[in-house]
Amino acid sequence: MNVQTALPEGTRVRRVPAPMAMLAELTYRCPLKCPYCSNPLEMSKRSEELSTEQWAEVLRQAARMGVLHVHFSGGEPAARRDLEELLSVAVEAGLYTNLITSGVGLTEARVKDLSARGLDHIQLSVQGTDASTADLIGGYRGGFEHKMKVAAWIAAEGIPLTVNAVMHRRNLDRTAETIDLAVRLGARRIEVAHTQIHGWAYVNRASLMPTREQVDACSAIVDEARERLKGTLVIDYVPPDHHAKYPKACMGGWGRVGLNVTPSGKVLPCHAAESIPHLVFDNVKDKPLAAIWADGAAFNAYRGTDWMPELCRTCDRKEVDWGGCRCQAMAYAGDASATDPACIKSPHHVRMQELALTEAADVPPDYVYRTM
Amino acid sequence: MTTPLPAAPEDRLPDAAVPKLSRGVRTRWDEARETHMLLAPERALRLDAIAAAILAETDGERSFAAIVDVLAEKYAAPREQIAVDARKLLVDLMDKRMMEVVR
Ligand code: SF4
Ligand code: SF4
Image (cartoon, helix red, strand yellow):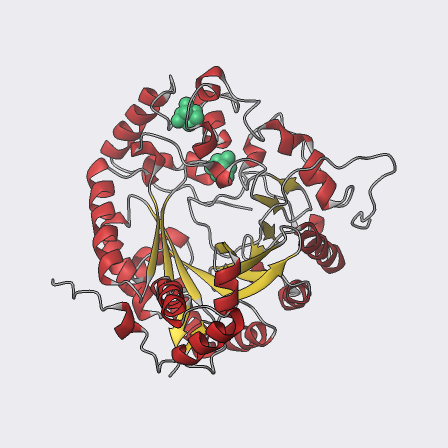
């Protein structure tokens, strides 16, 4: 089967502002098994993955419809042998290319090749600041040491680097060290992000959930480092939902800014959208990307403000946070069209916070590692 | 720990300095939105006509003073005003690690 290029006759594409970014999840295969992985619990197998040609067509269509950034991710995108080829297609189409990687599967030769082909940026995840913690969290021995080598190859090529640090209970006390590590690795930017609780993270929430004190200390460290490292390291900080008053704007609003293509070609409004059971997702094998974006049922389910519950519809923040995260509403309120329970106005807010507090107070259970 | 006082914009980017967009940061015309854009990791900034004009002359060859000269001539505008605007934009991009001084 091929990726559809032409619109079926008689279809009218509604005028919806073009997406800015596409997350291309090339594969779910990954040698690591982070307990906060946002991949769905049910993952598609290698045999269902889109072919090189199909991905190439998706990338070209994305560029034509106005996508500016493409993020190659996974799983571990380097697990695809055609990563280099797809990168070249994206570069040719004028897309800004970003590789989101754990580093495992990259060699010095591959980093050089990616650089020569015009890769704009790399995001390297770090699971911890020393080998023993990092490898426990990532569930992969030797991962940390390899990552340090990858960072050095990236620096040698001069490819701009962002360090991705997902923070949670077991590494939050190392926030300062994590920021120092990013500076040492020559990163221009670090993303200090608290775990978003859905997908594998929801299963593991009791062992991931930080205490209030941990979160406050982390925020203070970030504030101080931001000032001190101005011009050296940009720090993007994603505070946790569980201690917040208002939710974050999910993806900048459902169906507003970005889209996500899964390894098998399904097009999702957000990477976790498959956790909402009643949504039906179109596939690039059946329809052009632009038609899916504009008219797809899943995209229109929570686009804009019409779908909102009374609580949000009458709220003056409705176009600030767009009602928050649909997947979190699903997980905690059992209803994807409810107000995000991270919002203080939500009737589920108190329960969600209490759950967070009791879980953070308990002895953390062992991780349930993601499996394929 | 002491935080040093932030340097004045004229010291960060003196007239003789040669600024350049860092690798991984570029401008392009965005056909779908009909505007100039500055693309950087995780960032897409809409550029207004003035910012686009300033960045178009920031080529990694010209000094800051030369950039201001070119702009003053091209747009027949007072040099001082252009210098203030251009320095503000470029130093702001330096703070965001999108711009560097190559010489
Ligand atoms: S709906 Fe929730 S999980 Fe999905 S992108 Fe938005 S914030 Fe993330
Ligand atoms: S009520 Fe809805 S729109 Fe208002 S702050 Fe809460 S989540 Fe946002």
